[in-house]
Image (tube, rainbow, N blue to C red):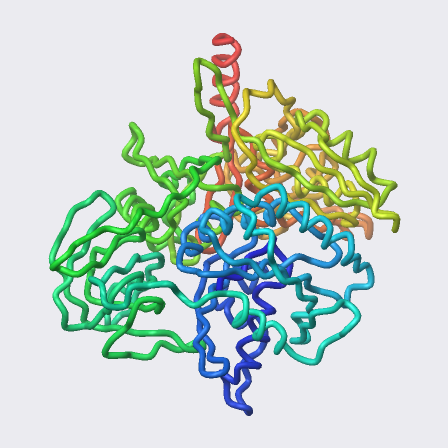
Amino acid sequence: MAIIAHVDHGKTTLVDGLLKQAHIFRSNEQVGELIMDSNALEREKGITILAKNTAITYKSIKINIIDTPGHADFSGEVERVVNMADGALLLVDSAEGVMPQTRYVLKKAFERKLKLIVVINKMDRPDCRYQEVLAQTQDLFLELATDMDQLDFPVLYAVGREGRASLSPDDPGRDLTPLFEAILSFVPPPRVDVDGPAQMLATTLDYDSHKGQIAIGRVFRGRLRADMPLVHISRDGQIKPAKLTYLFTFLGLKRTEVPEAVAGDIVAVAGISDIAIGDTIADAAQPEALPVIQISPPTIKMTFSVNASPFAGREGRYCTSRQLRDRLFRELRTNVSLRVEETGSADQFLVSGRGELHLAVLIETMRREGYEFEVSQPEVITRVVDGQVQEPVEQVVVEVPEAHVGTVSEMLGPRRARMTDMKPDGKGHVRMEFLAPSRGIIGFRSSFLTAVRGEGTVAATFADYEPWYGEIPHRRGGVLVAAETGEAVSFGIANAQERGKLFVDPGTAVYEGMVVGEHARDTDIVVNVCKEKKQTNMRASSADIAVKLVPPVLLSLEQYLEFMSDDELLEVTPQHIRLRKKALTLKERLRARSAARSAV
């Protein structure tokens, strides 16, 4: 069973309940919440980033469970693992209803002919509107279904956080027994050929310091044993002899070594060092490859380059172009939605992903590993069809109080967004749907939350490629740029803060050309935050002593990526994130600006 849904609709929390009520853990074992989100970044951000699998036993029947991400930027994870499933639980929030990613994951489930069980979750929400949500879900099934059988699906009502579900919205339920029973009665067991020649598709990679490279996937046919003659068939069709050194199946959070696995099992195998996602392990007597996993192309690109700032090499363990190149290409083995290309420069690499968050997670992971590098502003990936430039377009769903409807429309209008639907919920909120070019949405989320004072939600997912929407006006104002290299001091910051919002506080090391704040006007301006007050023999007055400093604005990595402009680079180190101009000196920036005007 794959568990699929839009982000924050309760997938991982429901898996917690399934694991606990299947008695996977000891009665006195402390396991906490969001058990499957074991990655540090997942726990910090509160979202699932990587698809993970586990297994439970109910009435002596083993049920493999695949927990998938709900954020649109990680949809490649859904595409990668959904082919292992026979059925899926589609979770829909009882208040938010059908969202852009709900449509996407349901479409992928239909393409795989999975049996669907709909779970309307979070029935305890005070703004619950399950009747409307069920109607939306039924409309979505009618729109996306490819045959009549897909319109036959059971509906359960759940509170995943409390571990209860029922078949009726009026019944609060006591536990998840109705959900277990629905899985057993509605989802068929695997229809497989147990006695045929072995076939397994690798969908996930892991690594163990003792066992080496580990491939995780489903056995689609036959039986696998560690000592049997096998072949490794790569995505491009190359066939090489292979032998498994370890064979594991899953139960709860543990891997159990087994002598044999049969068709229908999800297994982890070791012994093939160069295996990649999408490769097939097959019987040596009949080496037949399984269909290669098809992943939708990326929509956003950035340039990763060696750090060339004045502070280069001070904080990172891995700073060279060779180390950066090896790390990026190693990421391709497990991150199937990512693309990495070499450029004309040995120090720069073009990295493409499914969205800003997708690339931001890669950047954050690398900096925590000790890498030091620079990245450019995110750009959309265009394509040319019949001589016409096309760009990625996203479906954007915004929910705000009625008082902010005009604000949202004014913000999205200049970004070339086109409203496709608007519905009030009768409780003071309005749901608005737009089609907008991806480049118009870059940087929208943070400015939106500021404009509506946090009283709204926004979600977007890739819709399609459409003809170029036209120019979008520059959305960001000017910045404050450091005039010299040194250490920021209170006197210099106090003078600079009159010009705008500062990103640094006293004691922060800065260099010439580093962006230290946001200017209140549309132009860039040079400020000297390192300037100290001249010492005199005159006794300082109390007004001089009490320098009032405004607390600095501390931007996250994602906020920096949204904020930065095309003439800037983001310096990323294990300890700091710094925004800088590509041309560090004022003279170089003026020369570059003059050259750009001449080119125009």
